[in-house]
Amino acid sequence: MRLQLVCTDNNYKGPDLHRWGPGTREIYSIHYIVSGKGYVVFRGETYALSAGDLFMVFPEEEILYYPEESDPWAYRWVDFKGTDAKGLVSRTGFSRRCPVVRGMAGVEPLFHIYEDGVHGETAKERYTAKVYLLLTYFLKEGKEPGEKRTYFEEAVEMIQNSYWKQELNVGQLAKNLNVERTYLYRLFVEHTGISPQEYLTEVRMERACELLAGGELSVQTVACSVGYKDALYFSRLFRKRKGTTPSNYRKNAREGLTR
Image (cartoon, rainbow, N blue to C red; front, side, top):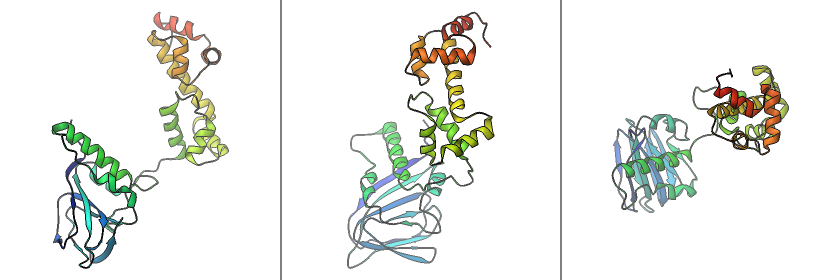
């Protein structure tokens, strides 16, 4: 397995007068201040940090950091690199304009990446998963840079991913997107010519056709698999949409009569 994000180091430094830099690195390194105080000098700016604050070391960027002599900091750090690193970090609150994020006291346990007794590829994959999880706590709400996804596109994705959930309905879609139902209705009519409920039903019926054509599942199982608890209701709805019963559709599919 070729990992797109790799943890290269993870450790803890207790309170002392150790300082690093000015210098550069080839990796990303995120530091969490456990206790005490210290300073980060980055692009001509000096940032004073204390417990609960964090800072990021960016590849090929000169940085200097050092403790407050009267109350030296202790910190944990995680170093990482990989093809996914730049994109993920760009979506966080850390940036080359300001490498500091403040007031995140609850994330300290996420910096315990390494585990005793875990080795080889299993360790790499597990540590990578933990770094992904750590970075998600700093992701900013909103779209990725350059991404212009619409509410309609997000609603379609929700339907495609969750059509099998019996509780999925237009009200839930609107709530998840934080939009009014009437606005969501207008978006679907504009883009598809049908309501969001009709679109959801169409997605469910098309998936039901695929399952029935496979010929192995009962009508009850197919109904449940596409979001309907009541097999009779599903059968009536299917017949209304497809002009035949689920059982006949499966029979015709076996004989090559469906399109």
